[in-house]
Image (cartoon, rainbow, N blue to C red; front, side):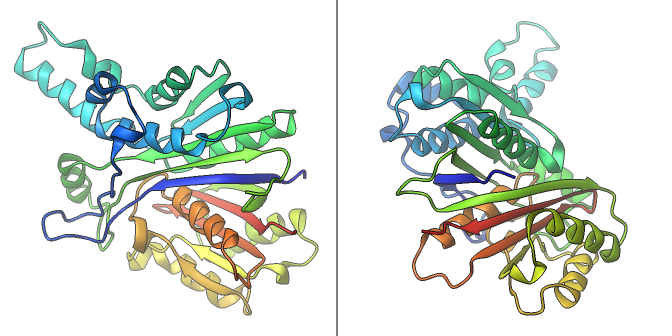
Length: 319
């Protein structure tokens, strides 16, 4: 499989839990210098500003005509705008509704805004596949590279609001789990450059693996396809989120696979949300881009509430 190079990365991710909020809230930048149009900026909701700013920063050094595709992903979309629109429907009894919150609540708003601001007339796609949203976007981006595109922007974003946090708690989805939010974007390239951080050599998704044994079989088949020796895995990154039942698979795999590998997690830093694995890719790519880094090959394994499972294989750029 032809490797796909990660040539640039950007991230807006969470701060530690504060006393004011029971979840991990993103540390947002000063948007004025990134989204310079004040009128446009005021009309954007929080998640749109996060996603647009993150995406624009990722391609800031690249001419618009060089961006061959914009591919975004989100698990839950623009929650604040959706809540605002639904509240208006109730309060106004379905009459005299302001269409702006509805328009801004659509899932493809971030990708569209990036294209409009930078005047990028290229392939533009948004994936909303629950816990596999980012993986679907990343696979699409890799396929675009394999088909001849030189530069593809791939990103993911999700937000959390007090209302959505309360609903997830009532549904029992956050037992022992810190909820989070964030936006991460990656500039994928067909060829390496001086700024290349890492290369993605494989990705796989699957559903409803009932045990660590089932997952281990998927991992072994995946590695046989992409590596000559499974002992090449230096770094095993898992999506442990603090829930003992959901973390059991990760613990079993750590004990049975890759005995010589380094183990680490990422949801303790970014929190749990449908596209949190994008933060893991950002974390690994950033580490590979920093010197020194003894690890050469990383395997990211994540599952979203034991339903959606994914494997992403990343290698450090070999100079």
